[in-house]
Image 1: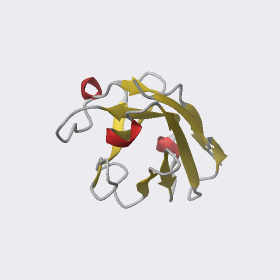
Image 2 (image 1 turned 180 degrees about the horizontal axis):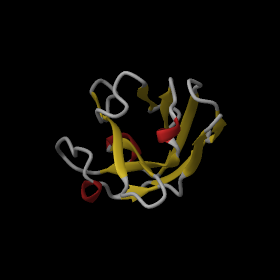
Image 3 (image 1 turned 90 degrees about the vertical axis):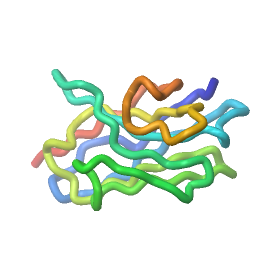
Length: 125
């Protein structure tokens, strides 16, 4: 089991940027796919980005492709989500997740095993 703690959320104006961090602990961290999800009030949790164990392969939801970038530093047990050109519709609670899947887990919530507590992102003028 991987323990995950997100940080870096906050309030930003439209067009601004934020970088979220996820600190992971647990001996299986380096063998996990890592991902970012978000959930806005009254909406289902949405998968945003995946990064493979080596960091070489990434995938994104269409809603954030070209604006968000996921990265990981396995030496520091950290995963990042760089968010640029933020929009009001990006306002949500953002969650870091880990998957022990042996193949690409995709952005379906059911394929992810461990979750952080979330960090709030608010985009408003």
